[in-house]
Image (cartoon, rainbow, N blue to C red; front, side):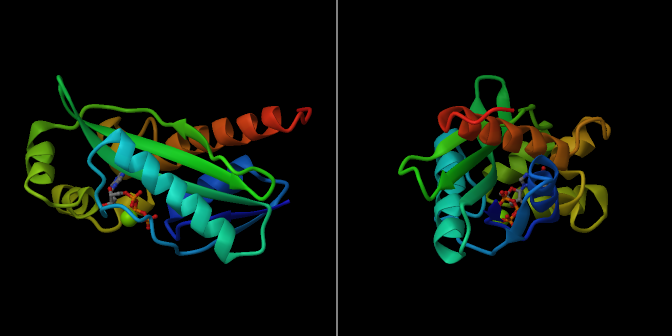
Length: 171
Ligand SMILES: O=P(O)(O)OP(=O)(O)OP(=O)(O)OC[C@H]1O[C@@H](n2cnc3c(O)ncnc32)[C@H](O)[C@@H]1O
Ligand SMILES: [Mg+2]
């Protein structure tokens, strides 16, 4: 099978390659149709679905996958949230799956609420570059135990498994 991931982010591409190791994975830069920094589950899901649809339309593949990172307000503070969507040629409705979530430290959340994006905030906070392509915020704040790639791998496996179940495929 041929699969397109609607992002050029390294952590996202590797997550799809890991889950679809027997298939051909291509990456394509597509718009998410939502804010660069989604601020709710709903906006993050919409971004993931748009990326999956756009990836499927833009390339000659069987499956388009969108992975989107966002944040959401909760009674406990601002949380990281992550969503994935899968669109296939044979189905009109997307499959979705959510990723692990953790609370962000208040000093990070304050900057997000003022309108900064998490990617640059994390680089500034850690005095490094491109953290979002590597372990991500989740990797930093879990002391490296769960990286952004691992978190997205889990999401992609939940997408793949639901796709297999829906299409009556064996394991
Ligand atoms: O190239 P794309 O696919 O857009 O990859 P991205 O790293 O920008 O990822 P998202 O658009 O899905 O994430 C939305 C914003 O949140 C940031 N972000 C999300 N999760 C992150 C993480 O774990 N570590 C660092 N930044 C993160 C990201 O940099 C964006 O500013
Ligand atoms: Mg982005």
